[in-house]
Image 1 (cartoon, one colour):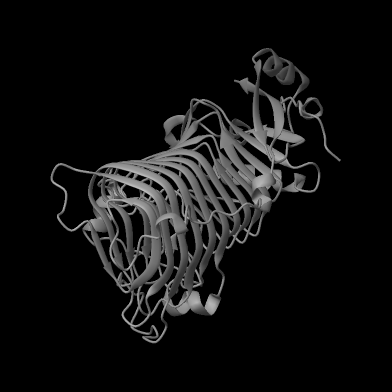
Image 2 (cartoon, rainbow, N blue to C red):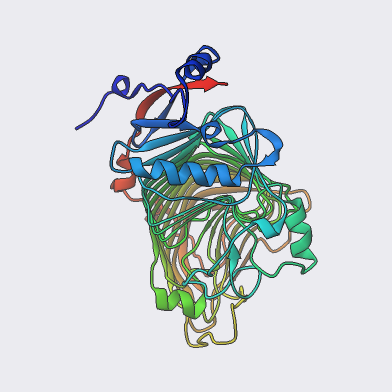
Length: 476
């Protein structure tokens, strides 16, 4: 039964239960200033608390790791009683990794709330590598737990009024480049084996590595994020759906040192064995700046398969490539049924890039006969300007990438553009109304073909709607 927003108007608890005298209760009530905040969430919550109820101190110096974990553990009892919301008020809240431990939970960051990631690596728990990767991405073995982490959860909302997660990543980047880390760097948000997720209306700064990483998840909405990192920072991918089904990414602005969106599904023999693809993914209204990487990357860890990706209304500015497919012999898996339309690119190295020779294996145990399949790739209604090279498309010898379709694409060249605009090997497909004219492996169909495919059906994740939730907040 749908519940109206008014039913969910809640007051934050005025006292922490246990041991308070009536006089102290009255004194504390008089010290409160009540105000309201609203947001849209997949579900609203009946039980609300503030991080200050658990000893949180937002001075930028006091560690709040224990306070956040105490809040998570305490609010877990409400999972089956209308769910719970933890409010983070204005302040600078220093913390290392903490775990969301219960379903039907919302974490809400006030507009002036900043979660500051602790910089001492000894404060970060080390967890097992992902089974579909077999090892960490930065180093053999485990990985540091993410700033916000959770596993085996249902109905999780991480949101705010553009509150901030600041990963303070510079120290991590320096240690990574110097080879001084024994484990893979933490991400800002990682949820595993979970469903019904919303991550929205936040600013993410300076992540030590990837920013948002749903892995082995279903029914995930990522919306309204601003993700910022220096363009020279290492591996600061924006949003990485990994072996996920039914994911929607929309209305995000990303400045990154790596791919703005990187679609993944496991690494070589580990991803093949785990066998969980990323599929039914919608990406729309994304703006990306990444001079050394891609707006949307498919792979290179794609051994569980990637299929049915629909991207539209994308803008790339000063970004190395628009859509990039990365794979290699040994990956296995597939990238298929990819649909892209209404893509605007300004100042690019390549508009299109595909490679079957990306390399980078987790170990020497990969199967050299595990050949990835790349097929049914559709790009249409795209415009670009100040581009150095239209396309670099390299399939795999003896196993070409097939079913490539590019239509209604105009690419304006940079003043010092490459003389060879289309570099194509081991691919097959067609083009229609493409400027500059494509390579011979993508023959122009003229009037025989007006546009490449884009599905007409609606995915289930596109029909998910958020409810208006209204609460009260307090300043102590």
